Image 1 (spheres, rainbow, N blue to C red):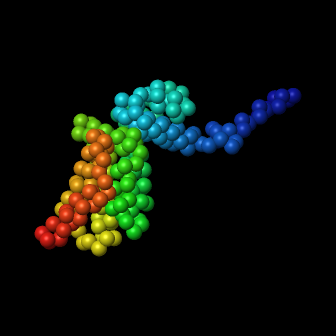
Image 2: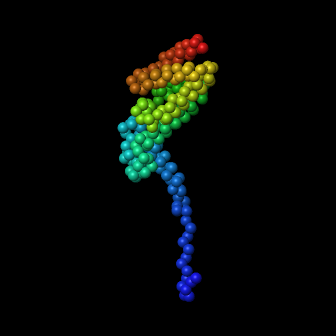
Image 3: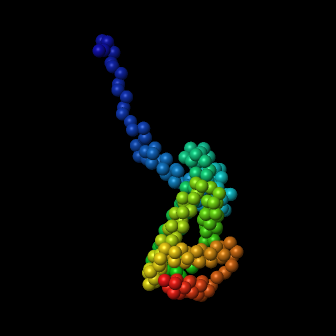
Length: 206
């Protein structure tokens, strides 16, 4: 009912809560969380575990400092997600590299590439021994690397048992870490000779 001479108030316009052309809040949140985790992964790549601070991550992601604690409950949660990004990226690169005719050559070359990134990856792998939150990501790395080794063995005419896959992975990881930590150079010829002897022993035992 209206009073004569007075117009009823106009109805409020319906809105979605986001201005036209702007991504929904949920999508913005996902993008910002991803940007922070990516920034943390880059810092791990460049300077290791100690380089990941809330301030450094926010600066790298071009977001306010408060965003780090808004999207992540703790530094540990942020580091865990960054570690997962590092592992996923490394495994994807190794899978792509080992699709060619010389998968083990590709694996040996990968061990000589981008030392800072690999230091960040292995530093977090060791840190998982102290931090249970990192352990599922560390296991994902081990399982994924084992699958890559298994594929490389099959593509080169071998039919490995699970313990054989672990043996080859342990050999390659040992050479990888020696070179990475001690900067001890291993020639491809030396590594291939060790791998060849290992495969020969596996076949003899089988």
